[in-house]
Image 1: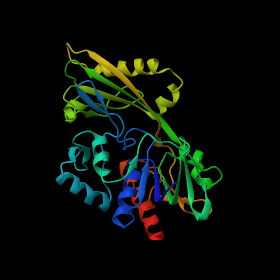
Image 2: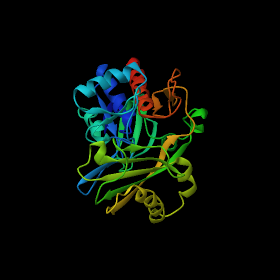
Image 3: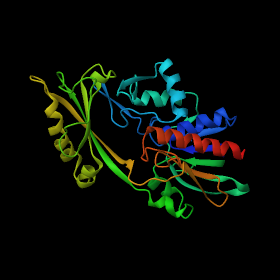
Image 4: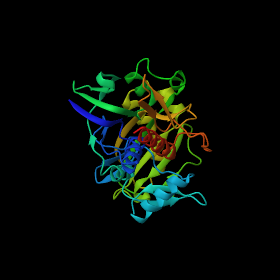
Length: 320
């Protein structure tokens, strides 16, 4: 049976930053367990034909000194670029947002395509992480970065009551390839004068990550909640009507795909970067819905996930 000092459940930005923070503090016996085939979570990029489309986070902003220090390094390494926004820049990854996640996780041990089914107190003061495959991993500390509803399902009876009040809105994203150009203005992003129910529209060719013209259309959480019972084909048909507004004369939509995000953005948040649970308080729940007390934005975003992961990693590191 495998034993690790720290198991991190979820390979999104919070999990990656928690692991990097542990490494920086001398805790290297760390493993990220991720149910998907790639790290990144909502730092998600999909290949569509000859092109690419970001279909999770499109960009991020910076308010904290910690993130700014890292962004300066990422800019120098050409992992990210300033996309648009003045005086408050929106940064994006130069190769798609998932590329940034992979670069950040490059040196971290990750077990992909692996789903956790339960977390419980085990023998000799260790925690037992049970996988759906039947395998069990023992660990001294566990950091859970999965969306709160999923985290709660792994920790029956262990969590603080206030954690269960966190709720998430879904999001639907339509991804389309055009056989010609789009009329989305440079630099390829618009969130103004959009039809009802639409949050933003992005042209990834103009964004600079796709050789061909790929367009993502994001619907609002309110629209997604109203329509989440529809079949995929019905949802995609509605979103495609929006995409068609951005065709130039002679262009057509060549392909269409849908991404459903069940837990896209927290509607309620915790004013704490993490919560410790379990009988020995050696399980930490964190993620983008867990905000530092001094967070001025007050909402989930790239930076809140980043800071929450760092705080969780520091907390585990100081426990030794």
